[in-house]
Amino acid sequence: MKTEQIFTSIANAVAHATGKALTFGLCVLAVLAWAVTGPYFGYSDTWQLIINTSTTIITFLMVFLIQNTQNRDNAAIQTKLDELIRASKAKNRLIGIEHLTEKEVEQLRKEIEEKVMELTENKQHRVSS
Image (cartoon, rainbow, N blue to C red; front, top):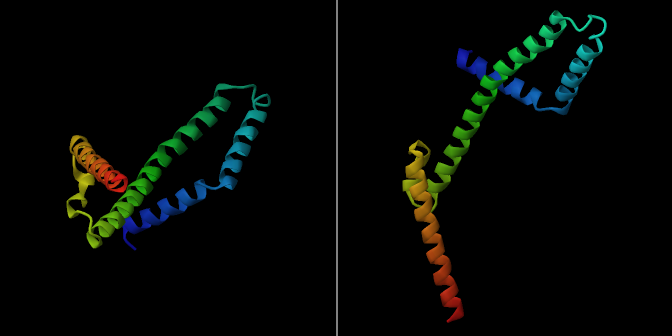
């Protein structure tokens, strides 16, 4: 198995597991257990360091896993949308617009909104005539 496939499998598994209520519950229990042990350890610096370090490491790693999952999901959705556009009577110029700059996408959005407004006005005009 390739490294990329291994990473994808692990990222999917972790993303799936961390999105469950059970995982959230376990994390809450871990924090409660840490808090309850505070008096036993005298609320020492080491006791505080344990939770700070643990949460920092987990957060750091989760950012990359979440970003990886979102990137793949977005690419898959975009590919599906591109195929729907290609297979329909829609304009193929919209395929790949995710690679345009924000200004270019905004300009396309405005053009499409204007066309929709024109079509709506024409349709209303025909109905009222």
